[in-house]
Length: 242
Image 1 (cartoon, rainbow, N blue to C red):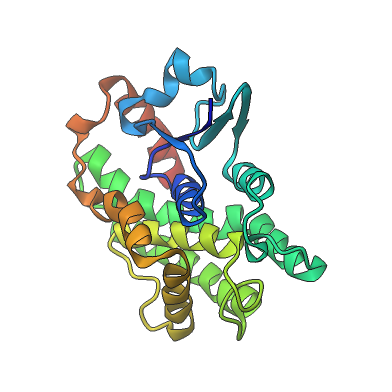
Image 2 (tube, one colour; image 1 turned 45 degrees about the vertical axis):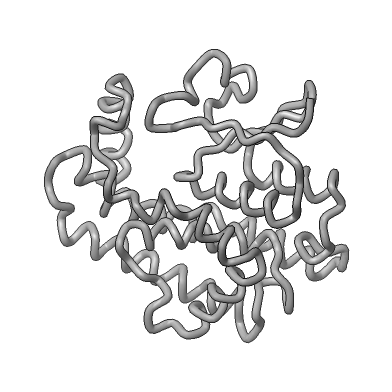
């Protein structure tokens, strides 16, 4: 049995894993797990990841959860080009530094904006409150400024002159806000240039393919969500958006 990746490309971390594997010609079997259909809750998937989250990896009898762990596993097993997770101590530390900061900053603030602009109105049937949208954008703008000044500075990529896992993790999150109808790259020439460079580094066609679903997310309707998940989603998302 070869490498299996359990993914839903609506998920930011899943897109990072998918793009990384494809751009490095890593052989794998794509196992679709449709989150809105509740497929992450099946007993079959629980055998792969008892946390009931994607992405997940299975390599023979070995299973692994969490996107950063999965990316690092593939880096090491398939001996991918050094720039993804540099052997140079200080460049690698820059990747680690960003990945340590990422979850509570770019990921959290980008996800909150997505929740507010897309999922909240879908679940309530009402337009999102303007003050909540403005607040989410303000919070995202704070971390985008930090990202540019602290992590990008005057470099093409986070770790220097070549793409790394840090760049991929960051950009797939920001594309979630694009799907929500907010352009984080507008009036940010440094961020826009970095976006183009990351996309070119992995291949524009692959990048666009991976993001096709999320860029059409506004076509999502409640009838496409498993009924047993709707109430759970409402409670979870309304609490987060409060």
